[in-house]
Image 1 (tube, helix red, strand yellow):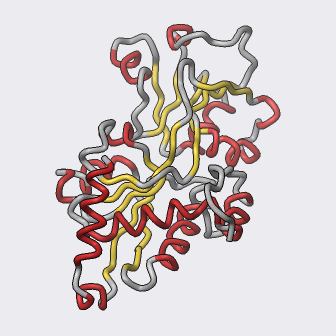
Image 2 (cartoon, helix red, strand yellow):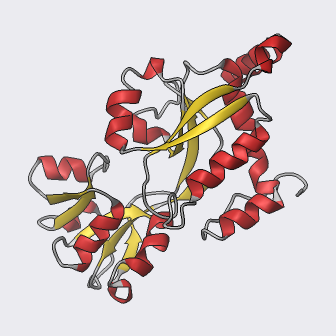
Length: 262
C-alpha cells in the first residue's frame, strides 16, 4: 500500500504546471441522507467535509456534492469499479468489498465509528452472538449490507423489514414493527432524540464487532493527484483547531493530533 501511495505522489509531482491550472470538477457522493451526515438545517458532515476539502484543494479541484442511495452508488457509479472517477464520503473498505484496498484508493479515517444493535426495550442479558437474535424481526435499510445479518435472513433465521433510511428504521422500532435495528454510533447519537421513543432505546455494540474508520474513497479512474491531495488534507484534520470545533458540534470525536495544532 505504501509503495502505491509513493507512485501516486510521484505522478502528482511530475504533472506539468499547465495541468494544474484549470479547476477539475469531481463528483463527491454521500449515501447517508440522515443526521449527522445531512441535517434539517441544510448542513451536515457531508457539506462540512466537502467545504473543508475544497478549501484545501486550492482551486485545483472542485468537489461537487451529491446525496444518493447506497444502491445507486453501487449499481450505477461503481459498476464497474475501475471506471469510477469520483469520491465517496464516509465509507469503509468492507462496505464496497475492498478489504484489501486494491479496487479503490483510501484516505486515513475521518473518524472512528462502530455498529450498534438498537432495541426499544431492555434485553434481559447482553447478547453474546448473532445467534441470540434468531427469530426476531430486524429493521434494515434498503440497499445496505449487514454482515452476518444478511446470511441469517437468507437462511430464514431472521425476518427483515426494510425502510428507506436509518431514521425510518428507528421509527419502525419505536412503533413496534421490528424488534431491533442496527446503525452506527454516530447515526444513533444524532437520530435518537427525534425517534419518538428516545427514553426507551437501549443499545450495545454488535457482538464481536470492532470500531471502523469512516474514510474517503477515491476511484482509480480519477485524476492521479486527487487521492494524494485528499490523503494529505485528511491527515491534517485532527490538528486543525477549527475543524475539531466543527466536528465537535456533531458529537464526533477525531483521532489524536500527531503534530502541532493549528
